[in-house]
Image (cartoon, rainbow, N blue to C red; front, side, top):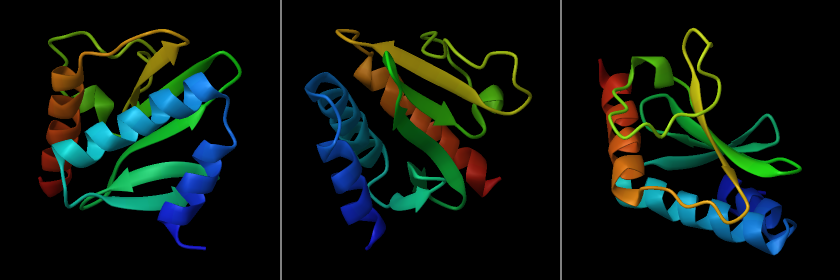
Length: 118
C-alpha cells in the first residue's frame, strides 16, 4: 500500500475529533509546502522534504505533531508545548476541541523544510 493510502486508512480508523484534527493538520502541511512527500514510518504518518519534517499521530487523549528538528526552529507564537526537553525535536499536543494558529503552524512547517536544506 502506498503511504498516502496508509495514512488515509489510519485516519479513517480514528475517532471523529482526532480524524478531523489530523486531517486539518495534514492539509496545513501540504499548504505550507506543496512539494512535501507523505511517508509511512514507524506506523506513523510522516512528512518529508529533503529529510523528515514532521510526524502526526493520535494518542488516547490528544493528537501530536512532532517536528524532527523542532529545537532549531523559531517558535514566536509558542506552538511547541511538548517535548521541550528533547535535544532535537519539539512537539505540539492538541486535545479535543483545541485549536491551532494555522498561519504559525504553516510557518513552522516552512521553516522545518528550509532547515533540511542547510
